[in-house]
Image (cartoon, rainbow, N blue to C red; front, side, top):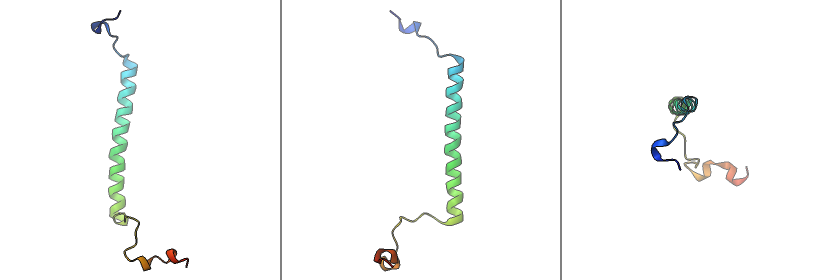
Length: 63
Protein backbone atom coordinates (compact mmCIF):
# COMPACT_ATOMS: atom_id res chain seq x y z
CA UNK A 1 0.00 0.00 0.00
CA UNK A 2 1.35 3.42 -0.94
CA UNK A 3 1.31 6.04 1.79
CA UNK A 4 0.67 9.71 1.09
CA UNK A 5 4.30 10.55 1.81
CA UNK A 6 5.39 7.97 -0.78
CA UNK A 7 3.48 9.63 -3.64
CA UNK A 8 5.56 9.99 -6.77
CA UNK A 9 6.46 13.49 -7.87
CA UNK A 10 5.47 14.42 -11.42
CA UNK A 11 8.37 14.14 -13.82
CA UNK A 12 10.20 17.34 -14.83
CA UNK A 13 9.06 16.81 -18.42
CA UNK A 14 5.40 16.68 -17.34
CA UNK A 15 5.82 19.83 -15.24
CA UNK A 16 7.40 21.61 -18.21
CA UNK A 17 4.59 20.51 -20.53
CA UNK A 18 1.93 21.74 -18.12
CA UNK A 19 3.69 25.08 -17.71
CA UNK A 20 4.03 25.52 -21.47
CA UNK A 21 0.32 24.85 -22.04
CA UNK A 22 -0.61 27.19 -19.18
CA UNK A 23 1.55 29.99 -20.59
CA UNK A 24 0.12 29.46 -24.09
CA UNK A 25 -3.44 29.50 -22.72
CA UNK A 26 -2.92 32.74 -20.78
CA UNK A 27 -1.07 34.36 -23.69
CA UNK A 28 -3.85 33.46 -26.14
CA UNK A 29 -6.50 34.86 -23.77
CA UNK A 30 -4.58 38.12 -23.43
CA UNK A 31 -4.07 38.35 -27.20
CA UNK A 32 -7.73 37.69 -27.99
CA UNK A 33 -8.91 40.31 -25.48
CA UNK A 34 -6.50 42.85 -27.01
CA UNK A 35 -7.62 41.86 -30.53
CA UNK A 36 -11.29 42.27 -29.52
CA UNK A 37 -10.62 45.77 -28.20
CA UNK A 38 -8.83 46.70 -31.43
CA UNK A 39 -11.76 45.35 -33.51
CA UNK A 40 -14.25 47.36 -31.44
CA UNK A 41 -12.21 50.51 -31.89
CA UNK A 42 -12.01 49.89 -35.63
CA UNK A 43 -15.59 48.75 -36.35
CA UNK A 44 -17.56 49.94 -33.34
CA UNK A 45 -19.20 47.79 -30.67
CA UNK A 46 -21.01 44.67 -31.83
CA UNK A 47 -24.76 45.06 -32.04
CA UNK A 48 -27.13 42.52 -30.52
CA UNK A 49 -28.23 41.52 -34.03
CA UNK A 50 -31.62 43.22 -33.87
CA UNK A 51 -32.30 46.23 -36.09
CA UNK A 52 -33.22 49.44 -34.33
CA UNK A 53 -36.38 49.74 -36.41
CA UNK A 54 -38.13 46.51 -37.45
CA UNK A 55 -39.10 48.07 -40.80
CA UNK A 56 -35.45 48.93 -41.43
CA UNK A 57 -34.62 45.26 -42.04
CA UNK A 58 -36.27 44.58 -45.40
CA UNK A 59 -35.16 40.94 -45.40
CA UNK A 60 -38.01 40.23 -42.97
CA UNK A 61 -40.48 41.03 -45.74
CA UNK A 62 -38.79 39.07 -48.51
CA UNK A 63 -37.54 42.08 -50.44
